[in-house]
Length: 278
View 1 (spheres, rainbow, N blue to C red):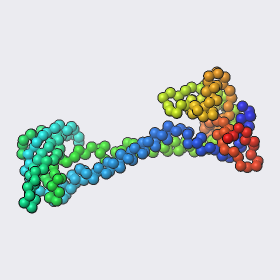
View 2 (cartoon, rainbow, N blue to C red; view 1 turned 90 degrees about the vertical axis):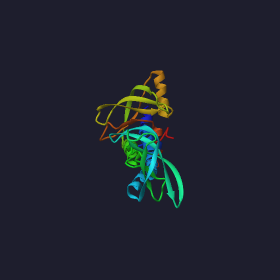
View 3 (cartoon, rainbow, N blue to C red; view 1 turned 90 degrees about the horizontal axis):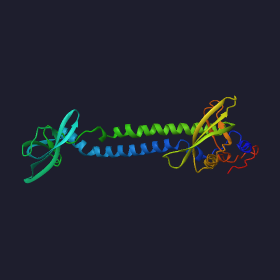
View 4 (cartoon, helix red, strand yellow; view 1 turned 135 degrees about the horizontal axis):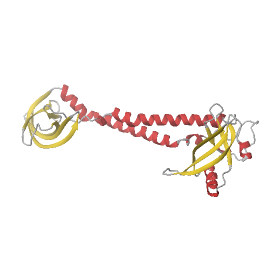
């Protein structure tokens, strides 16, 4: 073990990137997924806003005609904006340049205001008769989740905060590995982390910082990494051997158990022997 402690390169050290990226990887995985999915759904909601939502605005502001129509079906649609709504299917006749066409469309009306077979007035866009609604009704349910900001706020932003937390951990670990002081850590407990893939171990250890103050910490280690394989052997044999620990001089609570092979070989001629470093 003392050979491994001496094999830790002197600061500043060259750290393997995968050792940093793998740190707190669940935050990266969950945060990245939330950002990607949230922005994708927000983009889809933004695209669909060019459909019925914009058609409603056109019916509010563009030239339109009012014609007679007839209700074909009525279906309870639910509650939003504090009101009960029905979804109705209606038909009406549209005459354009002498050509008569019967059109059927759906819209939403206040619950109980329309019955099957009743006559209603229909608002129709003059330039596009396929866009219409029952007079006094609405064309589409304006649910919050149909808008892009809802998905940005509920998925993308929380995901971005998780990514920032992972990034903070990335630079925190980099500081420890590049500039940290080397200590001898004693493993006190090793346990499997359940319900996580790839397989992970939680190692708990104690060490003394540069002020000889006793510190206790724990972190996850990938089971199939060189350190994880060492810890797994210790867990099965019951012999918990000392291992190298690096800790930050100013913030000793930032620390990490590792092996010399977590570092790249030093290029300086004054570097200590890098035995065991790959």
